[in-house]
Length: 392
Image (cartoon, rainbow, N blue to C red; front, side, top):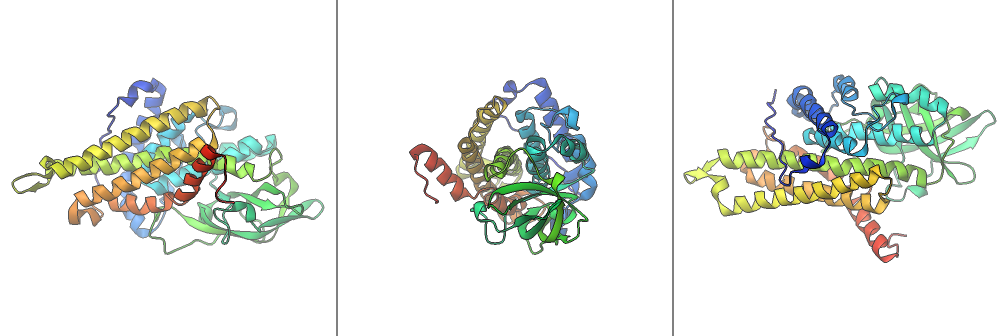
């Protein structure tokens, strides 16, 4: 088992901006990750398997729905607390954060915001502890960046609906107990609904052959004339804006999580630069290595400031979708570049599983694509500043 030697880095004293509660939540998540997940993550990554035994622990540290009110089983934390937890999880592995943020922002969030009181009471407490695991069905085989083109559909059959279609690239799908699925009704309006495992005609085959996010379970959702009780429809919001609002919450978590991955790569590179001796002295004494490290911590610090301010805006209900897009795009791109530089600093050792950079690099290749690709988020910012959409 690997020994987690990670030490935190706070160049601009960001901790001074955090409350004691924020720091306690972050440090608790960090300690749990170091003890329970870091020692096993490389093994599970190579096996392409999610370590299901950690699910109760994820629930215990607030990893499932941190901002869900206590009346529904959540801890009722603020948005900065949510971000800090995501940062600590992705510092270990993007797949770990994916499992958590899907459960939080793409399953619990829509039930909390758009669901009936009965749905909230039925699902949220069990999702908060990890007794239930959920997934989110939006992306389809032919519709990724254009989710409005979906063909998955529901038809009214009297006392229930009939659901047909398929979703692809769905995190948590292979072992999810329920799925929040988006489908078009007969008028072409997008509706959210909850599909429970065990419903006849509902299958969740696992997808294999991934070079990225290998420690996260990914699958398909297949619906073949599935009978959906009408009480499983999310009643309080429909249209494409509903799933996009969920994605805003998830993308916000990714912006924090990517900082964690970058910090882990930077920490490994900094330590290695002091320990690796070449030409009779540590490689950290050479100008080019110091340039790499200085640029890494600069970009991390800029991302920390960007994301902390975004968290304040989220807490105040002022953050826009475009602001979230900017942070998601910037921070994931930053983390991926740092992973590559850190890998190079380690030389040949950088490709071995003794160090985390190659795994982070491979994972971040997915993170830069999912929940809005790098280019789409760039165009969202472009549309926001010019008022002209370039992708329609």
